[in-house]
Image 1 (cartoon, rainbow, N blue to C red):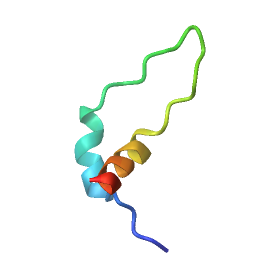
Image 2 (image 1 turned 180 degrees about the vertical axis):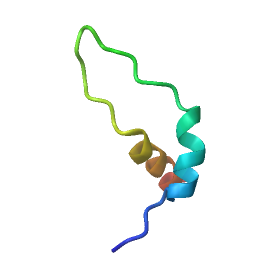
Image 3 (image 1 turned 135 degrees about the vertical axis):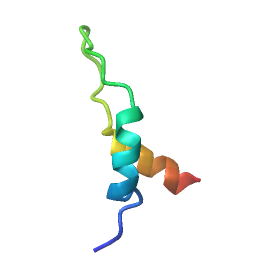
Image 4 (image 1 turned 120 degrees about the vertical axis):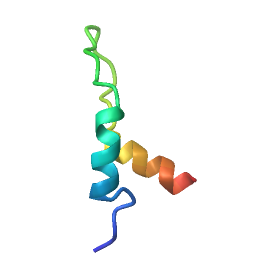
Length: 45
């Protein structure tokens, strides 16, 4: 199994700093999970 780019300790430190998802009354695209997005940023960097 591969190691996740965002460890549990790192995620626990960052998660409280992220804004809550706002409701979308007009619908729209589903939001990518925050942890997956952060993993993408780390991968690119």
